Image (cartoon, rainbow, N blue to C red; front, side, top):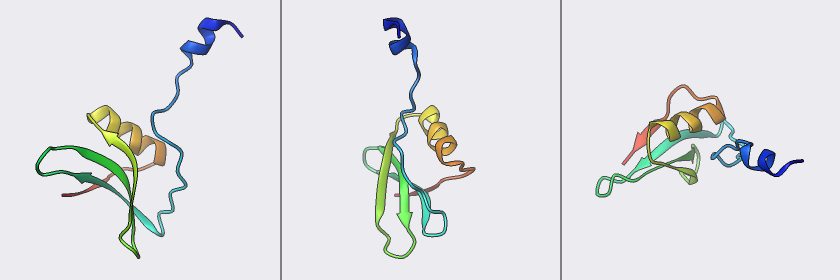
Length: 77
């Protein structure tokens, strides 16, 4: 493998996660004070939130939705 091939490969910025739509719902936790947004999954039974990635712009949100086959993502403040 050539050196330039190593650097040209594109990797996803979304970490791997075993999402179970029967037990979890996709959520964006958004801070009212700072505006910071974190995408992840909320357990429907316990309410526990599992952070997946920081959402800095619309591209990050689209990557998150695409990685897990989502059409919409709810938002909680």
